[in-house]
Image (cartoon, rainbow over all chains, first blue to last red):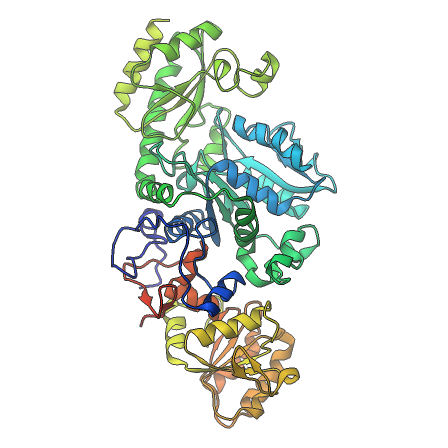
Length: 427
Length: 173
């Protein structure tokens, strides 16, 4: 093979996948097995001691899942990746590798609602504490740093409002204080934005969304950027102290620039257990092959639908970073020049009841709580995902009474516009 | 002079395919040290290894007899793999140049690089690889390391080559 760097579209199809060595199967087989035989006793010992590459048990590695992992690592430009059961599982394992009881991390408030719950509520049980940045500026993140801060967490393109974060600016703060920057790249996908190129150290994603792309399989991923020097101080003991489970091996020393991915696998995934099914890994792999085509169409359709809504007299406002004049448009051109993605919000005149009426009237859009499907999705957060919040909290989370969130699919854009037009007419 | 920031895959592949015997300076008997399991891995891939470790001379590491220095080796080797800090390189070069038959390759492990030292070896006709690990490179080019979710930075439509069993790949030509 020549030394030419393959393009993104080529990697989306080929990275990680070769014909099956035993059968020649060209498509990655689904290795639907719990465990793998050892070649001999010494081979088994080498595998358990992390001295050889190979498979023991599908909770830790699986050849189908491994293809998915390498493919995402290649698309994100990382050194290695680890696929897990869901995006939430990915976040849990990342924090498990970084945090000790009593530690803190800083997160943007502009996050998926499920992440706000996980960080603010569930993680308290582990004595891990989130500090929320007051706004999206790098200074707001720096203001929250304390001696206990172990990470900064943002979404590249934030759900649901379409906020495009200043990844470079926040990465500079993280670098200055020697803290890893974790970026959730679910909404943008590496087709629209590659956070590691902008200074992120770790990327997480829900693969359930645009990567799989068809709304049929749960999955999550952790990508190790290979950029963070864990051994610079003693603040990340999981990576720098001898591990009793592995004969006192030091992971950062042994695995160098992919030690973080290994730590998440051989400690977090092994001991906490949220493994992805090989069948789901296969479905997501197939989805990723068309990621570039789908993301182009998602962005084109979302732009057309946003333009239509902007001109509609029953629509109060549209928040889509792809629109000229949107407050995030300049950041979108800088970080996501190939498109602004599929998900955005708009306000319907008439408030809460109009929102409910609109989601009840649509015929092509599906009323459900997911994003990143080939089909178009609609939700009224105030009456569903954010129902438990009071009015002030709803407004802060971008889920006020009049807010509608769309995830625009890859159907015919004119059909989608016609569907919204008839639904708006009847409210 | 060889470029040392980037080595084409084909160049590394041809080195790992052509060498048969490797002296490993700094090979450890401690089973959790990288220098131990690189030695063990290379043995599993069919290389004849010669651990060099003065403290362990006369004992076996990864099943191979250990020698105190390159000067004690009983036969010539094709490659010398260096697991020592970069500041030890100049004295290692002197030992290498004193060998009765020069190795065709000197390989410096991950994190070890000194371009002046490399240039002096290259003047003597020795191929030099720096700041790389032969285990990682073998596993990357054979495909095995993909099982760990590692980004090999290479794509191929060819079948990996099975060794014995089902969990060992060989380097294909």
